[in-house]
Length: 439
Ligand SMILES: Cc1cc2nc3c(=O)[nH]c(=O)nc-3n(C[C@H](O)[C@H](O)[C@H](O)COP(=O)(O)OP(=O)(O)OC[C@H]3O[C@@H](n4cnc5c(N)ncnc54)[C@H](O)[C@@H]3O)c2cc1C
Ligand SMILES: NC(=O)C1=CN([C@@H]2O[C@H](COP(=O)(O)OP(=O)(O)OC[C@H]3O[C@@H](n4cnc5c(N)ncnc54)[C@H](OP(=O)(O)O)[C@@H]3O)[C@@H](O)[C@H]2O)C=CC1
Image (tube, rainbow, N blue to C red; front, top):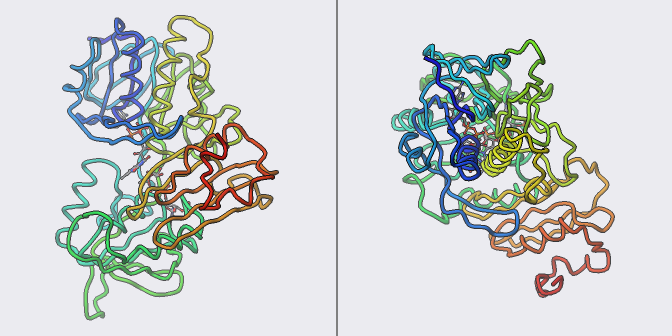
């Protein structure tokens, strides 16, 4: 039997769930079907808006069917989509089930880009199952090697206790995917400082392994019989040093993953840089009636100069929400849905690293500005790190670590691109309340 629904979404992650909820908000009378490989869907709760764009929320998981009951016309089908036949508007599931759609949104996220696939001692962290596997392996481990310098590695280094962590980085500073070396240095002081919150357990033995590059695959060695201690896995670094460990965590990014899309009419266009599904400003793929949102997609529209993609919760939510509005507009044959908010005007991300509030705004690392920009800096060790990036007197980006209370003013300065040349010496003056100043 073929199941039919006007709106079908593949994926129960943040982008898929947000897309479904928004579809139900706008068109409660139209059935929405979410096909999810996992019975658990991601939910967003406790949303707090800090500025026009910046919001903080909590992410939790719940049974897909329980979630669907909260909406008038929403159903969840547990299954894996193998293939989309776009000419027939049909999704083919591994179970043999067929699902016919009018408008489809691919929200299938990504999979960890591991440094070694299918290796018994190399783990990636992506979802509940992989976290459980990681926690089980952790119980009997005394030393792990952590590879990667982004969000997951930074969070693990802070959270893990009672185990030796050898952190292998290829950059010269820590957390380089998110922050500049100065902020990396600021965090480095916190690595062995008392925690700002309770974490997993016991005391951490932290070993920053000299910021060295891990040589690729050949560096994974088998147990060495001649050594006094025997570890399940050995890793050779480019400086020739060899370390043994119980297992290695490859926190080395994600790669978009999605079912095969067949169409005799048009091919599905994929970004040559990151293999994400290319979407236009209305979240449409190159294939008719197929949209995409979240980690799986790559924006191919003329982007605002102060916004760029990072595969984050915030963007998955914004894209899922926007995709739903665009799907409805397309369903009703209305003109393309225009931007409803500032979400794609200025990059904005709020998170926590090492117990500090971290706000990243605009081109926070001077992305794409080359070397032709000015940096204003205010640092109080262990308290705050404030960096403002100016070009031609205008604010282009900022890193705000700690309770700086600057996010709203800085976001406004990014949005209005006011010429700050006359005030720049006072911009970071702690004795001046810049919020009042620019009011
Ligand atoms: C460990 C970890 C911690 C993170 N922490 C943060 C954080 O603190 N802040 C932040 O902003 N971002 C964080 N991220 C990034 C964030 O999780 C992602 O950007 C976001 O979840 C992407 O959402 P998504 O809906 O696009 O994809 P996903 O959440 O990956 O959801 C994809 C969904 O599609 C389903 N699916 C996939 N393929 C198929 C198929 N063929 N058929 C059916 N279903 C399918 C999957 O089962 C899943 O339900 C973190 C990521 C990881 C891995
Ligand atoms: N608090 C937050 O906001 C969090 C966000 N996330 C998000 O979740 C996703 C997954 O996180 P994560 O896996 O940490 O990915 P990230 O993209 O954040 O970081 C991946 C890191 O791995 C490095 N890397 C890639 N390949 C290799 C290699 N072969 N050897 C050594 N290092 C390598 C990258 O370096 P390079 O860039 O130089 O290639 C980069 O430092 C990301 O989108 C991330 O933004 C995750 C956790 C927390």
